[in-house]
Image (cartoon, rainbow, N blue to C red; front, side):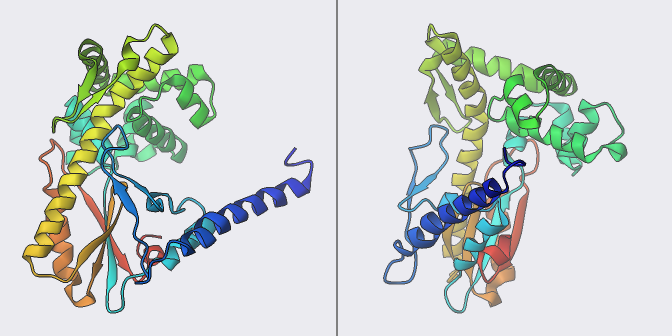
Length: 312
């Protein structure tokens, strides 16, 4: 219908703009406190994986995927005399998979500093890394991140827009290339079924009663939860440790810089421009040293005079 009726395209555009206006335009304006800031609530124990969540308002949900949505990030600016320093973990969940599964292929790719998605595509599609196509890299990336959420062939087929049979072949090829990952997934589900819960390396437990259900679909959902709990949970634990280390390090340095926002694997600091180099070093040390994985914890950094300018 979209191609047959031109008005539909305009209607969809209108709906997008209206959603952005009401939720992030007028909606955020009502949340501004007398000091000119928005003070959200961050929850430690709402997400079952251990990730932090945000509400009143949800600052984890400020648009980033569309060009129009990203416009709202221009409204988030530092206090006068400060700049925003943004740091986020680079592929932390994939690094957690490499650590937990102890897969030599994944560990080697991360240790050598390869483009992990390019390296994965080369192994999965059995081609030279130099000849990996954009499409192959995209498919490999989807598989890698999908595994962190327990995605199976049906879900991968939907994401890639390919038949289920082709999606299954891609998954099978991935597990042939990285067999220790498959073993880790199987072992994790078996242990969770026996104990009734999963446990991160930091000791965070997640009860999974779905694994004991008589309903096949519910059990399958429980298996997916078991597979992703250890991965996402470890990433969440590492990030929380990093936040504590960073806050203490800034305090110990006597800096006027401070943490002002956390979004998923990203932390935003307000920093005097004169202190930018020193605080960058503090942030790198605090985050990269939060936990000793079998692969390096890499941190991406950027800065600017607004959230949009710093991160895009």
